Image (cartoon, rainbow, N blue to C red; front, side, top):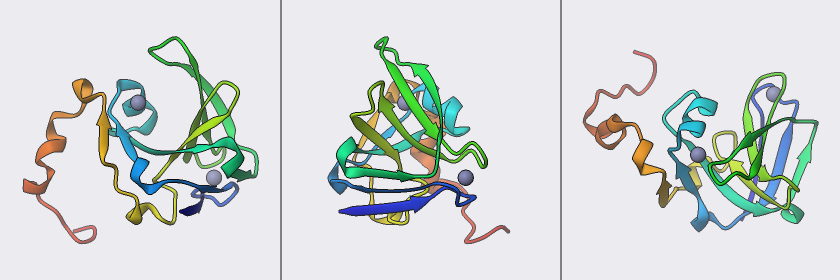
Length: 132
Ligand SMILES: [Zn+2]
Ligand SMILES: [Zn+2]
């Protein structure tokens, strides 16, 4: 399916073609730190199917495997856009800024070992439709 989205300030837009069945969530500590939250969601796409307009900032982090991972984000508003291998042949697109995020349900969760213990019981917690 086709996906698209803009960062919060609108400086950067991204469009891509993805397989919705491949959406996943990562609970590793790096994702928690970079997200400022319990996890990050992502969906893969090959570079030839990804178009980025605008100039994202990129931060290189070392993966546990020792490989360099490019982290693309908007330098103005900080929205996380993608991760990629060093040569940017394969992207993992962050799902939070995508217009189709509600149609993309992660079916796979990795790094359960570091996942936030409260995540599994969020349905029992207090929920409000908007800011109470
Ligand atoms: Zn932005
Ligand atoms: Zn991760």
